[in-house]
Length: 154
View 1 (cartoon, rainbow, N blue to C red):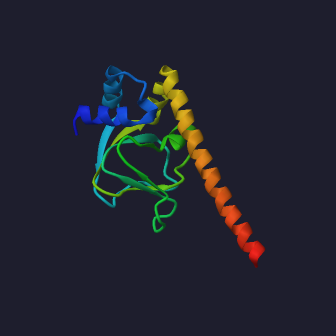
View 2 (cartoon, rainbow, N blue to C red):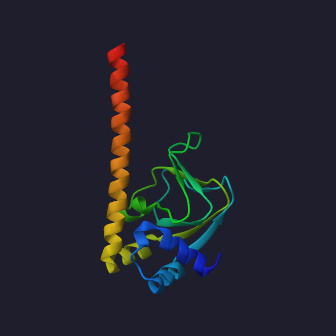
View 3 (cartoon, one colour):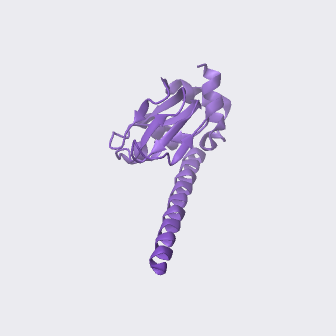
């Protein structure tokens, strides 16, 4: 993995889109590049939320249970793990490499420093988290509506 690959992945991430290339290089250098083989676990539910990750190449899958179907697929430019890292919470899901995977790991302290330094970045992270919350709420509402319809028919 080259520095340019990491910068390109950060640039592809909507959260980092307003940060100039020079600063993206500093962020990439501050992070740690990790590689995983397909099937390897990045983290499990209950693990410490000590970092956020950006997919540089490959793909990862998010599961609520290791044997369950994936609830999300993460590809180049996807930021994940930020909620646990920012909120000092344990992980709520399992993330595994769906294919050979390279990620940029941003330690909690680094992530917090970036958010403090770049207000645009903080706003983008808030938007990302709000989008995820809205999506989860819509899925719950659809599931509940389906259950209500089934109970009505019975």
